[in-house]
Amino acid sequence: MAGTHRGPVGGVGGDGDVVSDEPLLQATALYKSFGATQALRGASIEVHAGEIVAVVGPSGSGKSTLLHCLAGILDPDSGTVRYRGRDLDSLSDKHRSALRRTEFGFVFQFGQLVPELTCVENVAMPLRLSGVRRRTAEARALEMMTRLQVDDVADSRPGDVSGGQGQRVAVARALVTGPRVVFADEPTGALDSLNGERVLRLLVETSRASDTAVVLVTHEARVAAYSHREVVVRDGCTDPLGVPA
Image (cartoon, rainbow, N blue to C red; front, side):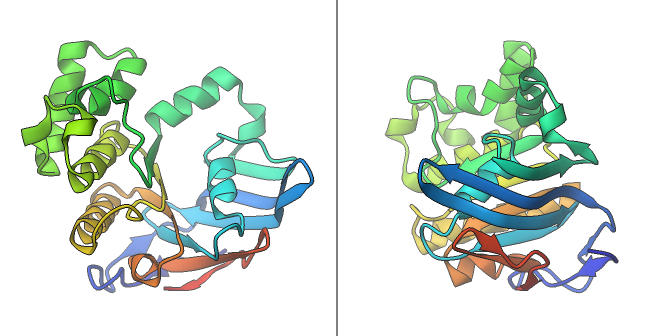
């Protein structure tokens, strides 16, 4: 997809939103099956730095499988996924794991926080896994939690906080490493509308401030409205260029 892209983001953005010319992340002709079930059938997508792309479609269409392939969590049966010009298949498992800790951030529908850890320990976990000392990691985690207005639950365990607080803690964990790409899989699906709007605005603000790309999987039109454009997935196939949101 050539050229520079501009576009409003869900009433929060404006004509000044600009994303770069070259794809940061690119998938071409992905096929993926689980047994006899074919989840992806030639899906393709491009994502640019600073761009929010909504991957939309009905339940079971292959949206989450596409996201997991883009993030290097799943290996496609065929096709290529390239990040910053490098084929993910060419990277070792160790290198891909490091990539997911440092340059990729993840937000899932139910947060997927570790229940045995406190909220600040959950946010600090990606830093700790990368070798950052505990005191430093937790200080940085607390700074991010303060930005997201959940520092008051830092010492609480995930089971003792509200759904909205837990999801903001999950967003803090996704952002604490300063990732270049955030993968968000139905990030507001378990939230009420107020907390859902808050999470989406945080993702938009992060994208703008840090030139972070966001790949947002959703089946809700109100969530997709926060994106620059939509890529529709149907029966494992995509509109590779997408349409403005």
